[in-house]
Image 1: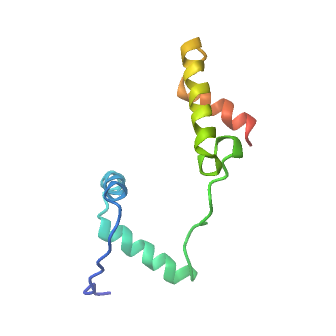
Image 2: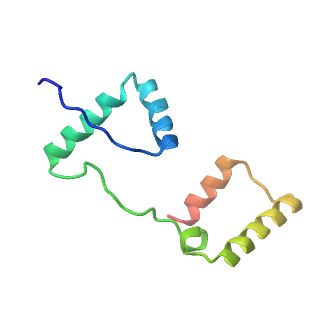
Amino acid sequence: MEKNTTLNLRVNPDVKRRAEEVLLQLGMSMSTAIDIYLKQIAMVGGIPFAVALPKAPISVNADLMTIDEIHARLKEGYSDIEKGNVYDAAEAFRRFRETHT
């Protein structure tokens, strides 16, 4: 199938840069990735993946917090750091998954 239509779109430059880094690792151009995406939309009759809000617990969902609640959470975090209550990232994510699944 011949490709002779141009698609111009505006995107967030940081999102584009991060996507290009991934596509480079996959050996794929942005044009090819977008072409695959559009073909999938046509084949499945819609977006080819679930479009949903992340299922973050309310206790850590900053979108649902007031500014004061966010500041209070940050102060708690700084206090924990000062007390040495820290974990490496892998341990923290493991604990989070255990308590939030």
